[in-house]
Length: 322
Image (cartoon, helix red, strand yellow):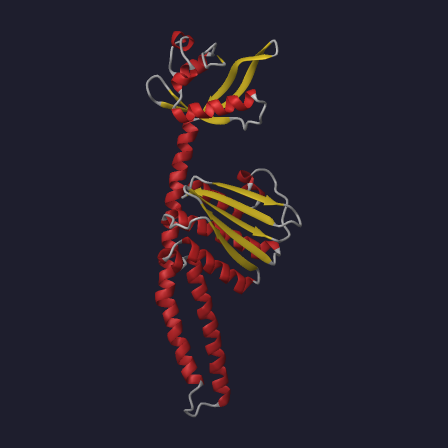
């Protein structure tokens, strides 16, 4: 516990051990002695809101600097201490989450590596499909076309069959091209996120019947490759959910650029659904597509919100640095 100015009043032994000081140092110390500039600003915001009776999301995370200079990450819940109805200080209940934080960081690193490897494999397969399979199908399609239009004594029934085979081959060729583009759109490597998103919107409109529009707000700028690919995959999954599950007739993608972040909203006019729990609970409720999107957003250090109600469509909003 500490007074309104941050001077320590009391603490238990666990707090003393966590901060790494003696009882004497504690009673002669102030909370700001153990907080970085950013942590101190967060502490001021939380305490100001509590004193003004404003809502505060708790528990919240703080970084404490021990006497030996090492960091301790804590999960903190703060409440006001009253004396005769007047606030005189704050009580802080903390839990050391340093090991959990380290494990989460390691997990995030492994997920980043796995995602990069997955994208590289998608890119490799896409190129192989384009350079080998597509080219072979193009040659086969031309040969069948030439045979079906040849006048070298081929019976009409055979010509008709050749023409059917040519049409089937052409259809397979278009499907493989779409698959290649879906795995790794060439536009995202050559031109960046926005051209790839516009291409995706056109493809969804063409093949699903869901009229998909793109709106760009703010000053456009080229995003780092990793950010651009992650945001593209999020939009791609959102649109896949729209045409597979929502029964929507239209969808809108809005991309908003600011100086230090990119905000993307995907909205549809479909049947919507009832949200169960928090965004972090999506996987256990069977919303695996949305859970995958959330995972990608977290790897970017961003946030995702899902808004949906039965009969009122769904809106997914993603904010990421960049």
